[in-house]
Structures are given as structure tokens and as C-alpha cells.
Length: 247
Image 1 (cartoon, rainbow, N blue to C red):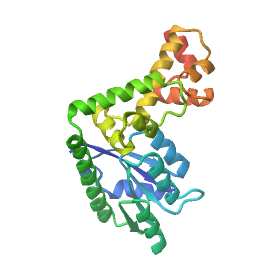
Image 2 (spheres, one colour; image 1 turned 135 degrees about the vertical axis):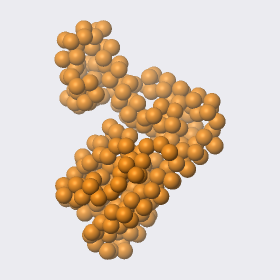
Image 3 (spheres, one colour; image 1 turned 90 degrees about the vertical axis):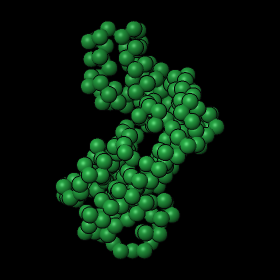
């Protein structure tokens, strides 16, 4: 069984600490545990990291757990989710089921019950991974991934490269493409696009005299300030520092 990554979202730090300590994550085949305290922080992590399961509180200041689950359904539908709430309101459960949530719990959280739910979600993910291989043989999957990689390279300067658009180009469903791509490469499409953008940016920084703003545009990131932020996250250096060190 492969290892999984989980994102916990709760505006209360003590609640996250309780989840960290109360659940046997190693026993659940969880290798990476991410934490967020708001909708915006969670979305930022989901854009940058490969996450398999999200466990979120519903009630948070501003955009809450339901908004987060809606975002996941629209942008990362392959991610499974579980929510918890302090209010035993049927409307929450109904909305969650409509959004395709795997399960929900009431506070105070019974950690053993949450662990059992997460174990069932892992089994679903395992079956989905197996289903990919049944639908497409290994050779065909590899061909699809290579085709998508080429599309990404050819259109890297386009700022709106999205999984759904790429899936349409290779004539398969977005969810299926996401699973095949991750199976073949070990990373999500969004993570691969970011990695590719930074790799090309490194080349342009060391081999050309183009400005950081121009390089940012060349790799499909409209705002140079955001490009600098992403570049530093990926390399530990700002673009200017990288150029000075390696040019």
C-alpha cells in the first residue's frame, strides 16, 4: 500500500494539535501531514502540494469548510475529504453529501472513529489507483503522460494551464488524467507545472540577461512578485540570488 498525504484544516491551533497527537497517522500509512488554519492557507497548500485527503472543520472565520470542499470539487476532484462540526445540524450533513464528502463527524472528535474513516478512504484511493491500471495498460498511460508533458512544455507561457484543459486535449476525464499522471510521475499536474516553470526559469536566469519580470512572463506567471515567492519556495533563493550564484 502506498503512503498518503493528509491536510488538516482548523482555525483553532489546539484542535490541530489534538488531531496530530490523537490519531495514529503512521498506522494509517500517512507519510505527510500538512496543517492550515484558514481557507486561504488550505488552498495555498493544495495548489503547491500533493494532498490525498483533507480533514476540515466546517465553522471557520470567513470562508469555512464547506467553501473549501466546494473549491476542492471544482479544482482537485481527485482529493477525498472528511469534515467535522460542533453543530449536529442535518443541513450540514446534507450539503456535505451533495458535495461528495466521504464522511463527517461531530465534535468532540472521536479519534478512533476518525482513524477508521480515514482507513476506509485509503482503501478507496487504493482501489482507484488499481482502477487506473485496469482501464489503461501501462504503455498507454505512459503515452498519455508524455503527451501531457509535451503540451505543458509547449504552452508553459500560458498562465492558465489547468488540468481540465489538458485532459480535454488528450480526450480523457480530468479525474482520470490526474490519477494516471500521479501514478506515472509521483506528483500532481499542478506540482509538475510549477517544477517545470522553475526549471525553465533557472535556465533563463543563468543563460540570458532577461529581466526577472520578463522571465516570469515567459514561464507563465503574470506577477513577478508571485514568481519570486514561488521561486524562493522551490529553490531557497530569490531569482536575483540564483542568478548571482550560478550565472
